[in-house]
Image (cartoon, rainbow, N blue to C red; front, side, top):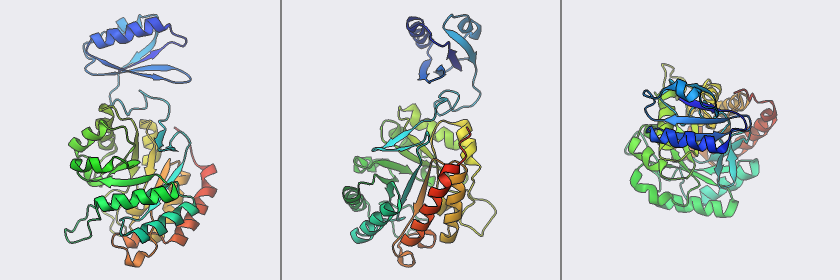
Length: 336
C-alpha cells in the first residue's frame, strides 16, 4: 500500500500518521520527491481500513500495491535512485562504463588494461578475483591476491573497482572494494543477499540465466529489506533455445525495469553474446535504449586470456566502442 501525501502537508500531521502506521505493525517508508511525498507501507496491510486513512487531512490518496516487491517498486519511490560508487554516480541521468578483464591474472596484465580503459573513457574498473567456472579444472581466480591487485590498480588510476563475491564468508575481503558484484549464479543466494543488505556498499546484482524480472526484483528486495538501497540491476543475457550466442541479450529489460523500479539498469553485452565482435553493436543498442551503465570485458591479449578471451575486446576495440557510445549517449531514450 502507498499513501500519497498532500502538497505542503503539515509536518505534525505527517508524523502522527507515521507513528499510527507503526502502531499497526507497518513499517512506513517515506519518499520525498520534488512533486509529491509518498509513504510506502511495508508489512501486512490487509487489516488496515483504507477509508480511515483517506479521511485524514494530510492524505491525498491511497492505493494498494499488488507486486510482491515493495522497496524496489517505482510506485514507492518515483524518482530514479542514483548509486554513488565512490564518487562515480550511476542512474538519474548519470551514465557510466565499467571495463576490465574477466579475471585478474597478474599485476602487469591488470595495470595495462586499467590504464587503457581509463584513457578510452571507462569510469570504473571491473575484474574478477574470484571466478565461478563451469569446470572445476578451469582457472578459479587469484582470490584475495586478486583483490589486492585491484586495489593497487585503483590507487594508480583512481577508478573505483567492481569485483564479484561468491561466498558470504569472503565479505571481510571486500571491505575496501567499491562495488560488490553478485553474479548470475548467486542471484538467489538469499543468505548472501541478506548479509549484503546490512552493508551500505553499492551492489551490482546480475540477473540469473533463467530468472524472470520479478525474481530479479525480489532478489533486490532482499538486499533493500536489510537497509541497503545502493543496488544496480544488471542484465547479462538469458538462456533460450538459441545456440549461436552464449546467451540471449534481453534489451527489453531496460524500459521494463525503468517502469517497474527506480534502480539503475546495467547491461553486460560481453556475457550476453559470448563473442567479441557482437559486443560493440550490442553496447551501442543498450546505450541507445537508455541503459544507465555498461559493463564490458576488455583484455590486452584476448587469445591468451585465462578466462573468457573469446568475448573480450582488445584495447583498441574498446576505445572504438567508447567513441561510438559517446556519440549515441545524447540520443538515448530516457522515457520512464
